[in-house]
Length: 217
Image (tube, rainbow, N blue to C red; front, side):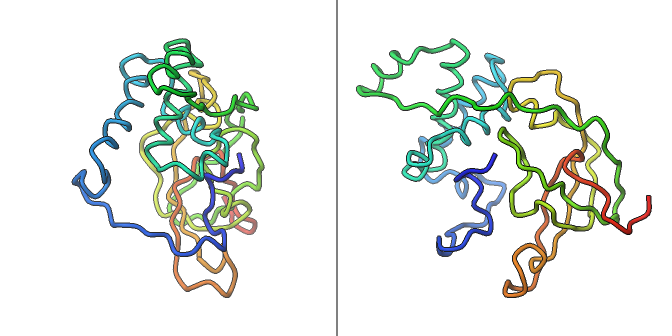
């Protein structure tokens, strides 16, 4: 789904402040509460088994844009997890309201039931030139908007397969499993000749890709 969560390549927001992650937790979590907030998600996923990580991601996407703008990264995971705990009957809205002392604003209800993985997909090899399907999906999807319709080169195919996010992100526990591919794109192909030279590598599910025209099987 298109939304405020997918701003890659958008202009007018200025430089993005960032730090380079390491294997330690301190560069990732800036305040003590943040790792607890993130861990809460896995209580619902692993211990209660009420939802999947992909459903949490979709709940983050469902946060109203006006609320999304005013919240920090890990706050959004608290809102998303709380939303799913209410939607699955673990908690009630009034319990959250009492704990907060005011109305606890949850994410918006889902507007789509998701979609299954494409019935036909192609297995690619390293070096293959591929193009990202130019699809606009109203539900959850793990392909950023800036690569739609763009061509790139496969650098790596994962040996593991994972549930197709467009399906499991909407609660489909029987979602088909697919490998993902590291696909390299030229920056200028994504954002035009005025962009800097360089490359961007995006991890994409097999069902998002087609063989580029002129590329033999």
